[in-house]
Amino acid sequence: MAAPRRKHSRARQGKRRAQWKMSTVQLGSCGHCGAAIRSHTVCMNCGYYKGRQVLVVER
Image: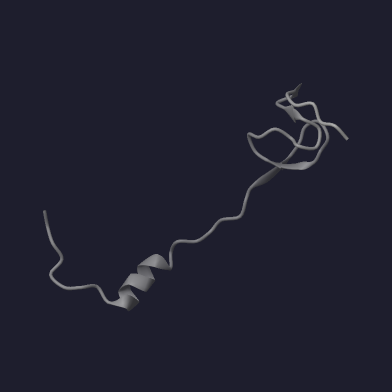
């Protein structure tokens, strides 16, 4: 297994790690009530998922 000959500097290490970024959460709209939800999740506003009621939401 290869081993590095020299230690990488903090600047080089920082340049490599600068490419890691947080991405924003992608939101869609509920097909039943129109609320903003994450994809592939049950709507917490109405309890529907893919056109079927999965949760009973008390208001």
